[in-house]
Length: 315
Image (cartoon, rainbow, N blue to C red; front, top):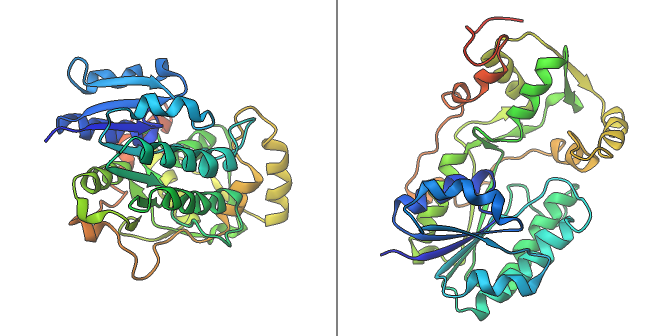
């Protein structure tokens, strides 16, 4: 049965993949974003009129009800990795999520999915992770049946990890290993995350639960960069960077309009990002997540010497 589903932050990395799956299933989608023009590229994923960008801002509570009116379900995908102006962790991840959950409850929404992050915890060192945990609590207080999804490092064509370091490898002979590159990750494919959310929306039995979406293999930060370099055919020095030095560098970089690294991201990179024992994950949804090795060649070829259509070599 077709439903009306509002995706807040639906033009982002996960949102565009989720929109494609939900549109294919026949649902009517509203893409709630601050700038609707930026979401028009999603319209071809559905039939005429099936996908509608709408103006909404989590920091402006009055903008939320129009995007929710008549909707059956809502997914909150809004997140930022660095703070800028009104777009702070507290404003978006906590208060914005709270206001959206309250508005969804008032609108009679049946299902609410809050996309958080693996590693969200009240005692996390990183402000990002603490704010994500606080956002979960704020949503559940207003909408107790909300489903919380905590993805690990997400991999795919528009990801912020492999693309960032791939671009860096094009111009720099050195890639940094924060704290020696020992931090552990369980990266997961964006298509699997989108499929998991779609299944959660289709199953009322999952209401009120928390899911940790982690890939099938664990890698150290060093191993992930080694995978990258192998795929793009480049030899680069992987240089261990002590925490204090990385902190100084990030202090300067975070002053840029689009900082490649911030001090809070340094905190994130110093804490293992793996699924907790006993947590619900893909298996509870009848899914076997894909390994990342077959995914990387589908988009990292752009960073090879000579570009996308060059033969893979070493440079």
